[in-house]
Image (cartoon, rainbow, N blue to C red; front, side, top):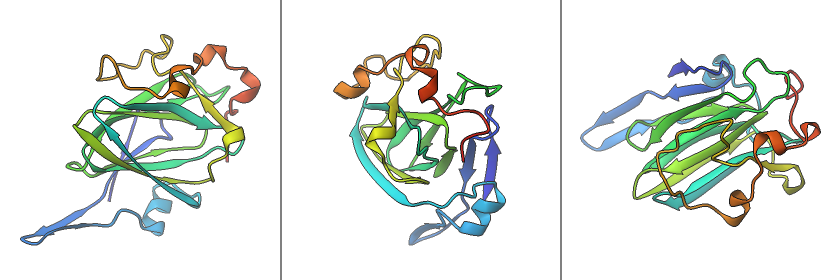
Length: 187
């Protein structure tokens, strides 16, 4: 397993080793000791799967309280995946990192608790899988406008397909700071 650091030190890209032959391939997508050695020490308590069509943009989402760390990957298709540091007091507050995840590159991205997350489908469709470190909590849910000018994320789709809820998300600066996670306070 190869762990690739990003511009946000807590966000990691993981490339699992692929074993292939004439029959196909095998990839170990999670192994507790290896992920703990990479610094991913929280237990996973919920798995989610979504299928989305080309141009769909889901996000930017997070929970606070009850923040979720997410280990994300693409089983079919391709997405542009983004993590944004929204922890008050963090030296990288408001900074983001984006990476292409696909069924071809088999990459995963670790988005720690306290970070907002979103992705945009760049293939015809995508099957997106994520492991979460806390259960979904509707009362803890927060959203940030995907095209917030202060973040300036260059999404690869000009007119993304959004849910009604995501279309109404506020800019990061419009969120009551008391609702955001604090740096060093997120488990």
